[in-house]
Amino acid sequence: MSTLSLAAILADNARRRPDKEALVQGELRLTFGEVWDQVRTRAAALVERLGVRPGDRVALMAPNTVDFPLAYYAILAAGGVVVPVHLLLSAREVEHVLRDSGVKLLLCHPSQAAVGTAAAEAVGARVTGLGDGGELDRLAEETTPIRVYAARAADDPAVIFYTSGTTGVPKGAVLSHLNLVMNATVDAFDCNEYRPDDIVLGSLPLFHAFGQTTSLNAVWRAGKTLVLLPRFDAAAALDVMAREKVTVFHGVPTMYIHLLAAAETAERLPRLRIAVSGGASLPVTVLERFQSLFGSPVYEGYGLSETSPVATVNQPWYGARPGTVGHAIWGVDVEIARAETDDRIDLLPTGELGEIVVRGHNVFTEYLGRPDATAEALVDGWFRTGDLGTKDADGYLTIVDRKKDVIIRGGYNVYPREVEEVLMRHPGIAQAAVIGLPDDVHGEEVCAVLVPRPDADLDSGEVIAWSREHLAKHKYPRRVEITGELPLGPSMKVLKRELKATYAKG
Image (tube, rainbow, N blue to C red; front, top):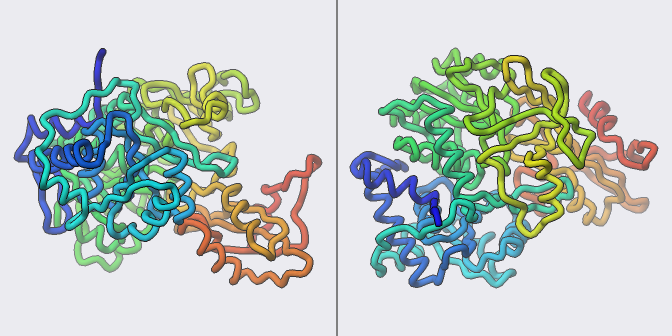
């Protein structure tokens, strides 16, 4: 049986360049050899003291501190499957992820202990602390390091990313070792032109597919130094990048907007060589201002958790074309199909608008425990993204709209149905429709249009405060509009396009 493990990315660096600086966080600096030694002791603790066996799913809840990559690669080296937990989720939402994935063990950073512990207790999972004084570190000190990482088949699960669908129920997208090793390798050697002295800022959340592949796995696949920023703050990011001589930046559009604002009062600016944007459409004016100020080209790309995530990106040898998300990456096909046809893939001629479909080594295996959803998404060997776009004669892909009503706020997906389900639990709300409205800072803002119950005195401020307690930080509506009725179509469905047209004016 042929084997492949995502853990090989780190293990190989420890052999090739053991003394090269791999990881920086504040005053802490670790070489690839030191990182791998720490990973091997933690992997041993997972196996010998915590009973992790190959194929076991282990949840990981940590910010961008050294604890994340150490725990992440330890799980992989032990043969486990990583289930990253979004740090903006409520305890109830984390509980769903833990229960649905069937994890028995949660590795949790102290900063997430309250939410993580409450969710783990609800599903009967064990919580093991990370960081100085945490249980995993203590157990690692008492354990002999593993000699080699566990063997896995190329198609075995490596990571399960939770992503909501139009139903609002978060689904686990299962990514294999092949998916993630290939995506990291292609990103490192085909999408970018890394240089020997490149240093990369890790400010994208590592629990997210974008940050995990581009700012961790691909960076280390290329053997480069990763500088971690535990929490993104534009002024702090500029300072860290200048101090550490960072040359490569990855971010979502909101980060670019904040960096431009912070640059106006910054004492010094980094001289970046490359910047990469994803997660949402980057306004061309922002791209141009960033390139002018920081002296680096911005390469915008596109992908989803289900595509590991990188599917397309503007690449140096094709030439960047602002307003597009570039070309398909090496070994991957990205085409436009007829959106109205559900049971087969009908590819459309160049230039026509349709649904973006993807096939290749980056496409996920399945939605965990959801064969119907998997069959709906994977058709004729293609993954149906649910996004609408066009592809021009030169091969550049442009995102035009979304087939689903997904709102992208600050690079994070917000699914209206999920928010609506929560809002309907409010005692004063009879009907709820959630839409995304244009926002200069976040790209889109979450707006809830509500019809109150007949006897309710609904107050928008109170609803926002209530929502904040029941929804993740990126999901709760910052804007609430109260109306007497919602516009309905012939089939009695709410006409959200009318709501957008009405409230965008306000």
